[in-house]
Length: 69
Image (tube, rainbow, N blue to C red; front, side, top):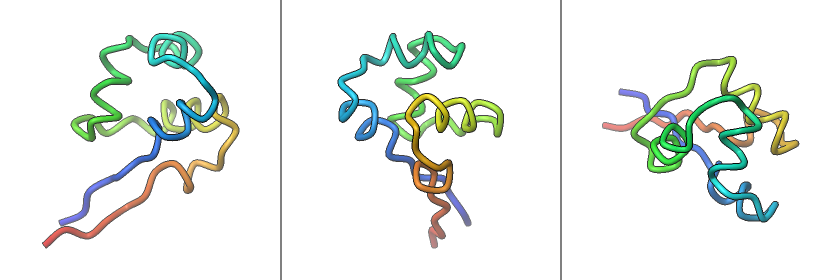
């Protein structure tokens, strides 16, 4: 089984950005960002691309596919 891990929280805090501000910039709710950071939400490709653009980090650096047994 594969899962999608992300480092959104780490990158967001490096930029001193709140969850609310990131949510506003990418067009989702703060709750969506919370769920994403906790790993309980897998973003659409479009949302992942928006997050990548806002955080100025390649999408494949932010989102990492992992195999879980």
